[in-house]
Length: 125
Image (cartoon, rainbow, N blue to C red; front, side):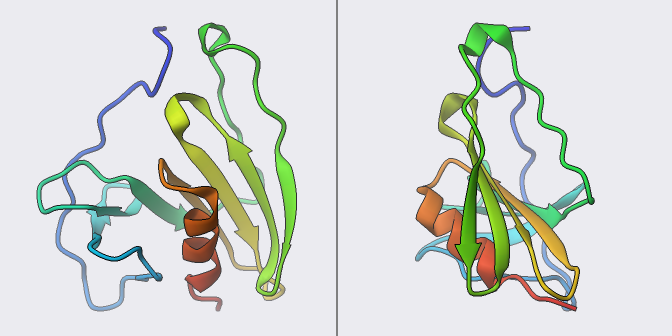
């Protein structure tokens, strides 16, 4: 497989009233994806932030051509515990687990602090 992000993300579909919309950086517009939600900087643009409910176990693939894999970093947050992992092509994954058991993953090519803020602002149960 070639190095870097393997696929282009689809365009965002309109949100439904019950969809979880977190804090987003200024100018970003949220929408639905087939398996979750996303936000793009302009209408019709490819999403640069994606979020979805997380499973108990998160599996991350890595291509050898992308170089050595980075180590996940555990973060303590007021909203629960989180893990940040720097992936290929400047994409970062943030996974957050809340005390109520709700878990989210946020993936994007924005600064980690922004992705963590998105994750922290997603609803609990």
